[in-house]
Structures are given as structure tokens and as C-alpha cells.
Image (cartoon, rainbow, N blue to C red; front, side):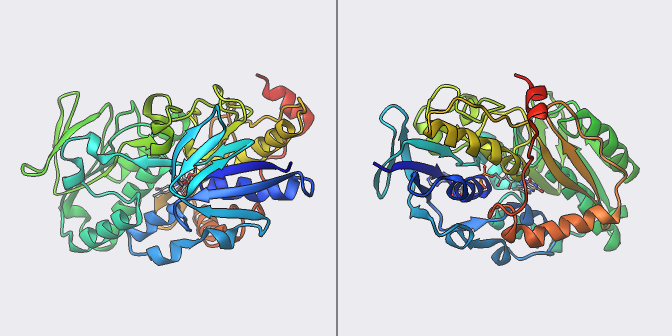
Length: 392
Ligand SMILES: Cc1cc2nc3c(=O)[nH]c(=O)nc-3n(C[C@H](O)[C@H](O)[C@H](O)COP(=O)(O)OP(=O)(O)OC[C@H]3O[C@@H](n4cnc5c(N)ncnc54)[C@H](O)[C@@H]3O)c2cc1C
């Protein structure tokens, strides 16, 4: 009987994995079904630009079908439970059995977890949120702006820094910067999770007069007094508040008891197999890996995952290893950006921001649809020697 691989989630990771699978499987070896509750694929990095009126949400979505190889079957359905023992997914369109499963359900925002956050705060992590923030920025005439992060982990760690630096540039261009105080708050001991990036970006922020508050764990927001309060006892007043809400794993993962704290699935950092469940792989934000939740991570994880999944299907024992590779740009405002290129063993060493990286990011945003999800931008092909060096 033909085996069945189910890819749950049609975001960056799921779409790419499904496309690579049908290219690499032998004819008739297995069918590939992609399940997503949403028939539209959303390019989330574009939301940053929506907040500044530089992109429109309508241009950031495409039908999932249009990004998939025709050999991938698609089911638009909401998964309600995953039973890893019976190897069945219960959906609102019936049960789907699998021989191998790829969980690619991403992360979701949990603003309700912090009192006052939902009512008071703007963010740019959804299309609606980014659009509302754009309207608020159009009305803004000066005052206290507080930008920051209300919980870890959060996807795309560069994004809050990009936003605050682009905001600084925008306010300068509008002649509003000397009427505005900008504060950046983070629960971390520095402005970015990785130190080599933080030591490069914090001085840029300071040179632009952005005040940094580290060890600031948002406890609550008081919309009446317009204050954000930290667990550490600090209170910062605001006129405009932009906080990235806490992130959690997908509801179906949590409801199925597959997630650890926060709803992230325990995943082998090299093979991308779920550590507790055979026949299950995990890609992208859904993992508990100690790396940035990002489209780039999903992109570079896909090759090793697909090779390991096919080996599993064929009962072969060889292992392919993901080396932790991530590559992304970080906008620093006024048409400049820097590059973060790193893996498990090599932290990023961001070069001086320049215009070339900004334009490379702009080009990538444009060409995304024809490259990453369709598997046309190569992943990290490692030599045997590099694989062995990757170790554990
Ligand atoms: C403002 C912003 C800027 C960003 N910038 C960058 C950047 O510059 N570079 C970068 O690499 N990354 C960036 N990211 C992060 C990136 O978008 C995510 O990390 C990436 O989309 C994760 O991919 P994924 O496939 O794991 O999940 P997603 O792309 O989120 O896809 C998950 C899919 O699962 C589906 N799903 C979930 N639950 C169910 C269910 N129960 N049933 C059926 N379907 C379900 C969803 O509908 C969705 O389609 C940014 C994100 C934001 C918000």
C-alpha cells in the first residue's frame, strides 16, 4: 500500500518541506498531503513594512495551492488533535492517517497572558495589528513611545529592533523626533538574544537617543494611567505602546499534549525528529530548538528533515544533520541594514550596516514567493566532513 506523509501547516516550513518531499520521493513511494486551516499562505516579514505604510497586507498573501507542486495533495481543514500512537490527525473534515508526520504549525500570539496588554498595546505581528499601528503612527504627533518584547521566545528576534530603528528614522524625517522619547524594553539582559548582535546594535540605538531598559519583564499594562509595569518594579509611561505579545505553540499541539512548556515540541536539534514520538518530525517555529524562530531557520532545517524522513520511510539508518544555520537581515533605519549569518557553532558577526544589505532584504521580500516556499533557494548542503564535524 502507498505510504502517506502528512505535512501539518502550510507556512514557510510546511510548504517547503512538502515541495522538497515530492521532488525527492521515488514515483509511487508515498503520497504527500498538506493540511492547513487557511487556504492562504502569509508572508509575515512584510508586516514590518505595513506598519510604516510601505507595503499593503493584500500583497503579502498567496493561495497555498499556488506555491505547491501539483503532486502535493492539499486539505483545507483545522487539525484538532494529533494521536501519535494511532498515527491519526483528527480534523474538522474527518480523520487523516499518516505513516510519517511533519508538524509545521508555527507559533501563535498570546496577548491575554498579560493583564492590559490586549487593550493597550499595538504590535506588528499580524496583518491587522500592523495596519492598526500604521494608523496610530499617522496620528502620532510626539510624546513617549515604548517599544519592546513582552515574553520570550518570540519569532524573528531582529524585528523589534528593526521596528524601533525604523521608527526613529521615520520620526526624524517627519520632524517629530525632538518631540519624542523612545524607550526600548526587553526581558533579556541585552537588546538581542545573542551577545555578538546586541553589542553591535545597542550602540546604534544609543547613538539615536533610544533609551534601553533590559531585565524588563512586562507584568501588566495600565491603559488608564498609560503605564507599563515590569516584574522588577520599574514603571514606564507611554503615549504609544508597541509590545510584541508572548508566543505559544499551536493550540493543536498543546491540546494533544505534545508540547513542553509554552507548547513547543521537543525536537532533536540535528535530525529534526520529535524526541518523544517516532514517525514525527518538526520544522520551524513549532520546535523547541534554542535558535531564532524564523522563516530562515525553517528554510535551512528542511533539507536535513526531508532526507531523514525519507530514510525513515525506507527503514534506512543514515542520519542527516541540521547545523543550526540561519541567515537574515536586520534593518537599521534610513535605508541601511546588516546581515546575521550563523549556526550552532558560529555566532553572527554582523558587519557595519550599509545600503547593499537593505536592498538585498528588499529583493528577498520581493522574490520570496518564487524562491523559499517552492524550494528554489538552496538550503545548506553539507559535505560528509562538515556533517561529521557537526558532531552530536
Ligand atoms: C513582523 C515579522 C517579521 C518577521 N521577519 C522575519 C525575517 O525577516 N526573517 C525570517 O526568517 N523570519 C521572519 N519572521 C518569522 C517568520 O515569519 C516565522 O518564523 C515563520 O513564518 C515560521 O514558519 P513556520 O512554517 O514554522 O510557521 P508559519 O509560517 O507561522 O505557518 C504555520 C501554519 O500552520 C497552520 N496551522 C496552525 N495550526 C493549525 C491547525 N490546528 N490546523 C491546520 N493548520 C494549522 C497555520 O494556518 C499556518 O499556515 C517574521 C515574523 C514576523 C511576525
